[in-house]
Length: 385
Image (tube, rainbow, N blue to C red; front, top):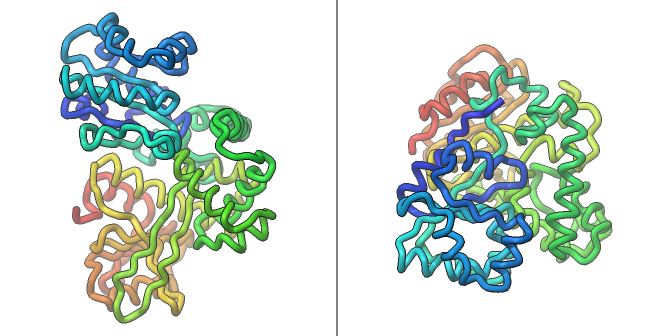
């Protein structure tokens, strides 16, 4: 099955060079083949012969491009560019001197950021590829998605749990151990389990360190590593409320519900459990984040919580707030966070998204079934951007 992805790399490549970043197995290489076919030159750094030649002499890049370029306007793809950051100096030169356009794919920004690589200083945009989203999957099965996530190989598999465990092992051994990103892999594995069990909660490095048997400073560094290798993201706090003082501590989410469960050792996702509700919330975070990236909306995605424990799960910019509840029947208590935020008179659009099949409006708050909300989101009817 071929999925139709919302990210149009062919259209982006006509405008400017760009980094295409995304976790392993989200389908970056497949997307480029699907959309560009033989119209692009592909320099695959996973090929040992190509990698060795360019690592010895990055200046060979230009001749490799000319040897396989079907036309002067063809984009050049460098796959897994983080494996050879020194190539970016050559890319910079070729953009400036030859007006070449590049698509630079990667599953980790760590070596680029920590190695002080040439990030092309505004000569390249950045695009992100995410796991599959609701509109991309025919006959979308919510329970299956919450349990196993949206990585294409997992969605297509008859044995999704095996695929997820293989993915986690690959991440640990290829991305972490092979690159020497941590000194002690067993300790990092313990941290991953603890981080998965606290997914979606406010970060408390000392507490997580106690649970994982690690110093708080090490825990902080490990979270930065998860961000840099694109398997998780920080959700910052929205702190512009005046009537109710806001907490400024960020939350952390893994990029995929299935990967979270694999790391946490989840066996069964019970519809009536708290874990189900947290997975439902994480999934909506994934959808919102993917939507903002694919539509090129450069708006922050945050959450809001007051010191008095009023909370709203997601705030887009300063204009749209979304509370997520896995309940099948919305009650007044589900609205308290949104009602408190509405009193600030800053955020204009307020939504409660749930599994309640009945759409209602309570004051300024629209209560929508999740399908209706996502249809409107991906139809560009939710966020006023």
